Length: 262
Length: 319
Image 1 (cartoon, each protein chain N blue to C red):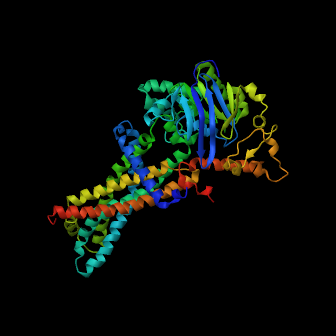
Image 2 (cartoon, rainbow over the protein chains, first blue to last red):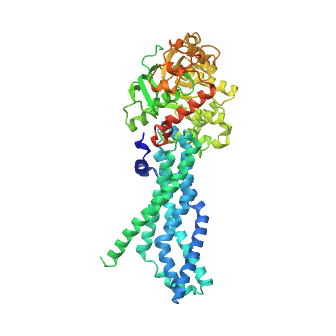
């Protein structure tokens, strides 16, 4: 008992549980057509319903980012370059992980709470005794829905962010739209875009798996549901920033390889 | 035992420890084909845990559980899934899936496990929902209906695949007396008309006597008496008398946690050891508990039960 109170052991156990659940859910990916209704429903909850808040966030982030970089560039009389910096930052970093943050706060927490409530209301047990695998019935549609809508929202959010930066550049920094987009085009190449989408996919699958796994391991009634929801947000955010670092490091190596440095 | 041949459910020396407490203690009993076996006992005495063992949601520490002669404790997940199709389970709260309507909930096992056409499925669902008098509410979601309706919906779902064995966890709790009686009639109908084997966990004595072919009385993880309703009514065992008369006759004695930890058996003949006046009841292995304490101990047990699945949550055991 003492040993199991160990935070490290718990973390390893949680990670193991999450990974096993994710693999099990992916093992049921062949049932995508059978569960299409459930998946579409999840896509609606995760994607469509999150669209307004994601757009609002990204718009404001793009605007603030333009203001901040504008201050620095103005010192060197290079305000026109704002577009370049905004696009590269949006595509490579801000787009994928700010969208991931918004989704974790809005979707991940409620996903864990929903599954946690199912667990404490014996609904998960009921599925088991009906020989319906919860990994297929509950987890797979959520992971698939999240994995499809996360990157989709990232694309929309990134574009909105770039647009927001453009508004500020044009109205407050005095940059012509044509100049903004001329430099913006140089901000990202194909690899950057693919890498941004890859990041978003990894973040989405991670967040969905963490939410489902915490939900499925919920014990202890309403308090347990709250705990599952909280743990989901904390763990997902931690993993997202950690994976972001790993993926960016890897990106650097790939980029150097592509550009012939390595 | 009825004379229908081999038992459908067979528990042999099943033991289970949860959160340091012996919940099932060498539990043995058999349920014959076609009978309604009712398990009664105090809250937290291990009734529901035994039900969870029956459907493979929990694994015993020791002992054997056979369903239709097949040992389920050693089954793989796939084998368990196949075996579970033989039964329907009614959970305490109904356990309907929240995002599906009543109709879809009852249809769910048919969609998952049969190749029936949509039309055929609708016919089956209608039949089952009419059986529990819920057809008019078929398009409602579980959140929009009462607790009793949820439970009846759960029953309709449990019966969707026409299982040979139906398990009920507290079927009448939370129902008004009229609906509870309807459910009892339904259970009797399923036995008489369809020959279903049914196992019912309850502490509603009236219902138990109405539906039971045989009754097993649970006391601290053991079956202290198994018999027909008449045999149970006439029981000389104090705990049985106390339970079935709702505390008006017989004695209640619950082992203290300390006694349980020391492994003192329930010892039905050691009543003389309990002396409320000496103040050392704990040493005798028994304490007289107030209602609040009994309730508190029940809560503790149910949280112990879950904590065993989640050991990191069980710090409260080691204050």
